[in-house]
Image (cartoon, rainbow, N blue to C red; front, side, top):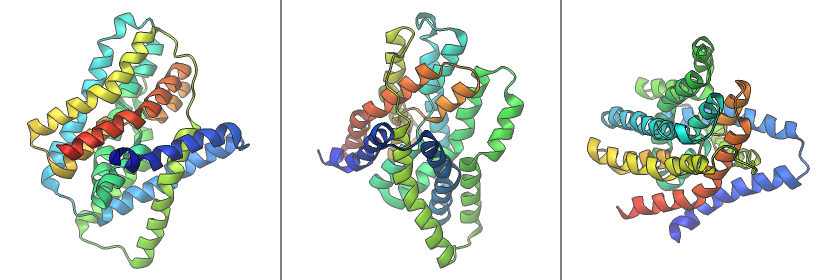
Length: 299
């Protein structure tokens, strides 16, 4: 019950975002602008601020990143194995495949920060920043054979990747943020979590999943139940413990990324099916992610 109450405020913001999108009278352009503000300004500020100020154990970073890559690979392969009976076109399957391994960074930061404070934020920032390029490469490669040129251009401009590298470089340089700059970034970072979760809720879409129902159900099971188990086993195998282990499992248990819908629509994929999977994993994560955090606390 304590774990549920710990995460309830964050998931309440998601539900509030969904209610405001439907009944609040805000135009679609408002939510589009909010998502851009969070993605391009507020979240990079949170990433840089957390990484620049944290005390990082570089000895744990390499195993953590390796375990993160293997966890995403497991999601990719588990969904790929179910392709023959999903009843989808090649593009439809490629669109949904990304929902088996891509992750919602907004929720990841909210939960990691709630459970482990600044160190949790910094660790999640390092892991997500390292995983973003791999997730994007896999998604674009499956959606378009000749997408590599555009992919690398997008990665070089990705605000989360840039903020991660900038924060790590600043941290390793031994410099410290001047007080006014630190306060400025902190105010932006404080706004990022609440507004990011509202944006996640506003993006929820409930409708028909399309394709074979068991195929969609399998992707949900892979993302919310099997991947956290894989991450837990990898943490034991690699000797990852403490905050890093918890962040790795939380990362693996995150619902699918909202950006998967944007990519599918941009590249002519199955936007409706992807939107359903994002919505289903986000709503069900209230239960599953709470359970995983509770298990971590008792381990």
